[in-house]
Length: 412
Image (tube, rainbow, N blue to C red; front, side):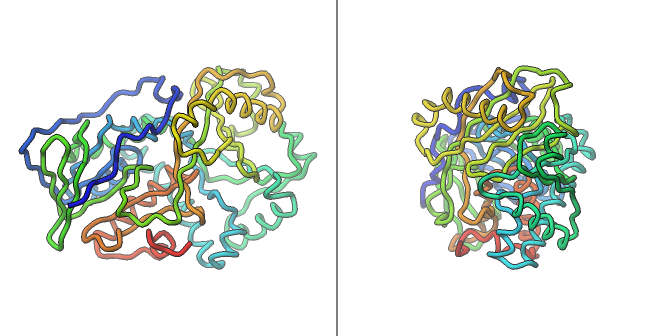
């Protein structure tokens, strides 16, 4: 028997725009000491990743039990800025250099497909979550200058994805201060809490049960199945355990390529529609750390960045005011029309990233019938959708072509 190290980490602080909007909840239940519950799949974590998994597994006809020490979607999901990008944290030029052209193209195709998948799920299940297709604009920065962007565009063209490139005069016409920029279709925006809760309601309608607030405390498994003991004294059993508890990675999961980083974000007060940039695109820059921003409900702008390796919650929270001012200053420098806008909501949170910018999805080595999905970096929702399809394929006895790239024990 081992402890599931999903302790009560202070995942976020402040108030995000999404939590301020007070989304409707989803049906949950508590457990009793001595109670035993069983399902095909036991999912630890009822955030956005767990929600995609629960929807996918129940769609395949599997019975599902979910365990979360918090209310559904109240952990890191509530702190997401929900930039649904097919572009990864690392440029495809970098991925091609490390992984080869075919692997880089495979990641590109999979990520673009994930955005389309999310759109279909929202439509087919009538989930009101503000999902809207958006273009993306990638601005040149100190990590990726104009020459680099031109090469990035050339590579993407070879991958079959066409977009536009503009240098400083063209970007100025769009309102941006940048040496150059790339503009592509295929991304989207969403309210992450409403999306997660909508997917969970879909899974519950199909028979899934969410145990919340319930803490998974001990874990064991053998060839016959998995056994999770809760702090409340109930035993939850199943054929397969799937760990989707965000950035609270249990000790038995190999995570040498993973680290916890802090990030800060804000939502402005509503601004005039005249201040928005063309297409209300998702905007980010080739810098480290990079600034990113997008439109949101009621004419607000959601902005994030200033990421820093601060794995201590108190230190992270103490920096929020300074980081908020720095983010607003960077926003004004990149898009001068927004100089002087004010933050109405500001928040901070932990997120996990890996040294190769790819998530950790697959079987947990040495743990029979145990799967996991961790380490999403800046593409959390996109990778959550990918994880759901990949892990369902794993349960069906299939192996995805990208499985080795995402393996938990891969050599980064």
